[in-house]
Image (cartoon, rainbow, N blue to C red; front, side, top):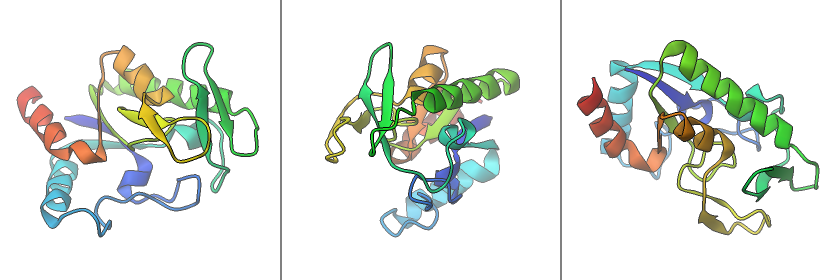
Length: 164
């Protein structure tokens, strides 16, 4: 199965802080989940993608949060610069790849203003999480692409098994 995966989860240093969110090398992830992740990588066709970099933002960059989570969306970085267009462009590019490659599932970074599929930060830069979706996760879901995050590896594996 073809899977779109957040580049940071694969160990690529594309996060806002210049680091990554590698599942394989994260000491907080159990060995059994790392093994499951590696099985997913080995048994499927992986498309690495970072919507924020694809949208034109550099690495490192100021952290950003969604400050208005309904249309018209507003995403600002911590110094107040509006980066909404970058997030929208990245989301559109993610959707384009999924459509071009017939990708029906994505594994995205939890809590991200691009990739969060359940929670996002509240837009105050106070590290408070609220229920909501990042712009890429939202656009993919609106287009019938299943979205999971790194805390949902078992659910992703079940989806893959059921839909192969």
